[in-house]
Length: 503
Ligand code: GAP
Image (cartoon, rainbow, N blue to C red; front, side, top):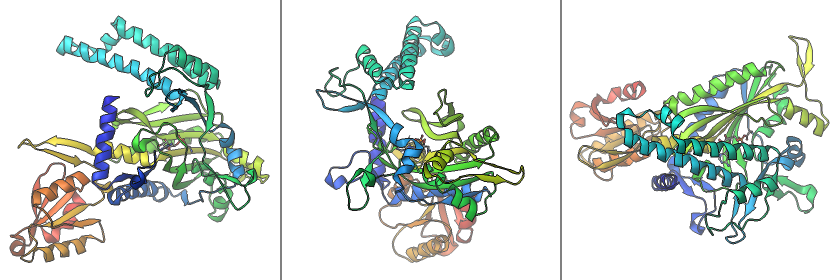
């Protein structure tokens, strides 16, 4: 936990110092679990969006886009099941008056036992040195086996309670495990209650229940309720997909994980409609396709893994998460669900309008099945950002902080730096900027020593620094410094574009 906290402190302060992310309403001491993206953050975020949008709508002929409104008819959330079942089990500590998710308290308890196992491994590694065999150690150490049995026992009971929605059982388990409030240190707990995660507001001037509308907790429903519009207006033939990027809102209670879990966040979702009976084939296709999308960023494949769901939501017949190894462990980054015909059927039922597709190939009408890919934009930002963050000790003993962002996602593709702000160098540098800016986002900077400017661009993640020096007016060449290797190469001005494209 200490490491996790250190990590969040480091990442949060770097994100703030270099204009990536600020706490929302900071001037007024902040608003919990809500964040604003600064000038560099919004560029990185937009680049991730573009990368996803193009991968979906440009690389697949049968996927089209949509931008549906945040406000939707309240019945939509009845039909989708969110009004009745989009809940978290909450428990309050009577002494600290702090509110927790009951399931997270138990998960944290299990994580602490895992931590004990990890400590045993570290100790044993030290003891056995090169002869250490982790698998054998885990299978034979009595202490580790004891911890593992404890985890299995608590986990299976916990899973059953969650599946059965047994709130009293959850509270009893918290008491039995002697879980204490981290603030007050006491075990003086209230009952566990279900808490709906949707934000509600009123539309219009009359305040009765019929005017209650919700801020959407997922973008997906905007796609389902527009299925007929899109299919008809764009003459889509099954199988086809509808992609959407947009804000979602959830009144999250666990809010101490920076942009991992926010109350206002963005999702990139795609619903792929297919013929019933073909959904498993498409599910497998999208599982692979989405992992490939992540891997194309150049982040090692060991950082990703699938986590197949053992217990499926009532509307799904297959589900997997793509998890990413954040510095605080493997966590869900994206969900891929085979949602059957649940959503379209429910909207058909609640709206009273027929939602069917006539498949001329088989001469049949049916409600399409759907495979969903749903990824958090902010969570992807955090994955990329935390992976990119590196502190490197250089030969002279100094430390540089460098953001090794995938080059295509970096806020600036290059910086153009005249060595001094005179002798005609700024004019040459501006010429280079003007030449490149139609293709790339380029930063011109002449303040500070060249070393400081390099460091600043390392910290932002700019892949190339192009230095215009005193030789440039004579030889028409610049020095290009590459961010990750810090290697420098002399390149003719006319070849800069080619150099950047090649690298
Ligand atoms: N339509 C399906 C759906 O919304 P989900 O697993 O609840 O599924 C999908 O959310 C993705 O949205 C998650 O994998 C995660 O990346 C992101 N996400 C969910 N809740 C979030 C939150 N509170 N803050 C940031 N991202 C979140």
